[in-house]
Image 1 (cartoon, each protein chain N blue to C red):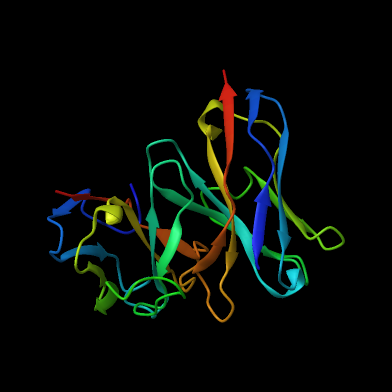
Image 2: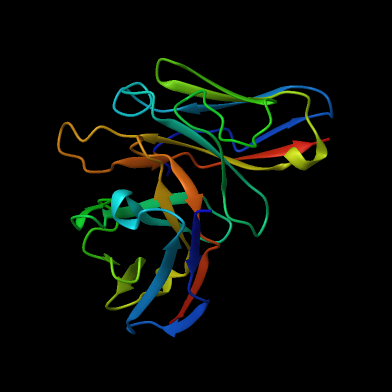
Length: 120
Length: 115
């Protein structure tokens, strides 16, 4: 059974750094794209980017390029999303997602979400 | 402002059918058949219900169906049930031709109310 289990909620201050994680299991981690989707409370979904752990090829949405870093650790089958300097506008729920095999944009498995709260 | 346009709300009575539209452009919905729909209940993660325009993941009732015409995709929920009340989001692959690297775009979401 495919599972994406994310790290717990975080409360941070603006300017601080943060790394949240997503532990993948139940499939070959290096053979599927895995990425992140943001949802500001009460708002819609935004694709942030994804990575192919097999060769670390990474694609970012233009809206998030330079703002976050997506990485993957093959040894622990864990994907991560990192900020160097958080802003209050980063307050949101972040979902880890897997791209369906044979597809380019469908997310067939979702993590439970990680709420990140950034105070100014 | 979302890349794909959905109506903010839709409604229907139990047993009725309701259709939700999702309008994009020739660079996304009109470009390929990589269109998906997700259902999200309050406080929960989105759940995939349609992929590649018309396909249903295992376990999704056949009351949910998808279609596409030109730059507009649609989700139809037939035989509405109380548990169908949720937010619905469409998404699409967007071609990078032209230099835009925005590979996946979402609609703003539609809140479906079962009256």
